[in-house]
Length: 98
Image (cartoon, rainbow, N blue to C red):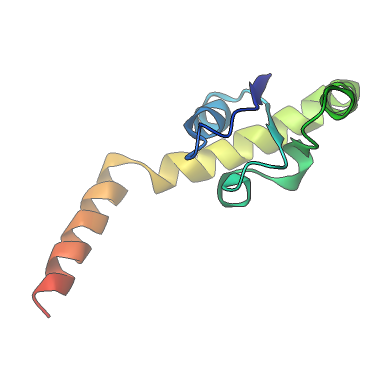
């Protein structure tokens, strides 16, 4: 599991890294950027009872949740691959010349 509790981690990079490596993230619902990065299946309230309950929920059907995490990781791998980033930079540069 990767547990992301801190509001100081604004971009939620540990969550993206978790998905990409097939690790299951658990993210607290008070993190403002969670909706951009995380899936609802991995979100819980920011208190110890909710975190504990989420861990137990995931642990009961670990393979299912891991497969969901791996699939999301594949999306991030495509989105953040070198070729895609290069294409985005080129498109941004070209739009400056329009």
